[in-house]
Amino acid sequence: MKREYWINVKHVDNRLVIFLNGETIWDSGIVHGDPQMDEHIQITDLLQQHPEYASELIFEGFNDSYDSNGAEDQLNPWHFQYRIFSRVLDDKGMLLKETDLIRPYDERHLSNPNIKAIDNSYQLVLKGDEYKVISNSLVQHYYE
Image 1: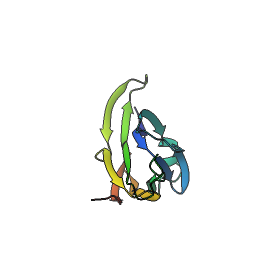
Image 2 (image 1 turned 90 degrees about the horizontal axis):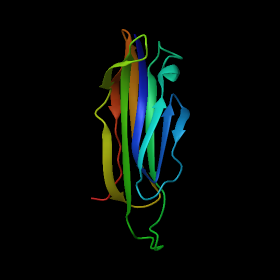
Image 3 (image 1 turned 120 degrees about the vertical axis):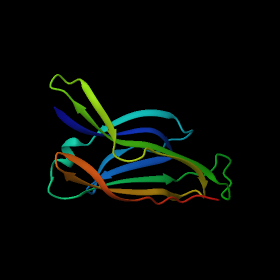
Image 4 (image 1 turned 180 degrees about the horizontal axis):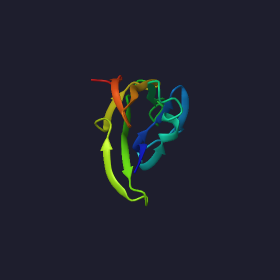
């Protein structure tokens, strides 16, 4: 059996950057119109580089564009959807089990433009033969 760790990104409206242990592992670039995505980012090898230490996984989402009509007092939408999960594969590569490490994140709000909309951080540690999220910090900036 083999265990893999993945991130699946489904929606990005504006920009999402993912860091693992200080290194950028994925950057959506600036995206408008909240398109449906299905990006899979494999993080197994990166987690296994230093298994004796906690790994920090950070999702930074930016709302960094103004409304198309140029009005600076307009609120902008942002939407970020991602999932962190593990897969267990048999010796032939067939999927046996898929498990979420966190409750999948799927938030959509309005906020002032040119801000960091989310700054979500997760600490992962190796417990036995699998990684677990032992702490997290979720920060969102939006207009209520």
